[in-house]
Image (cartoon, rainbow, N blue to C red; front, side, top):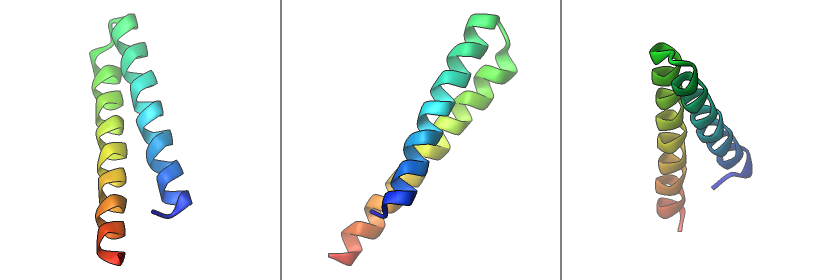
Length: 57
């Protein structure tokens, strides 16, 4: 997995979690939903990189 893509995935996951929890704490459902979406995007990016690595070997 390229280090850059791995870092992007982790940052997206972390940002999504923070945004989701901040939205939940503030009672803002839209922000919480956006955060959940960002976290999912990070998870998908990480999965994509793992699949690419599996085919490289």
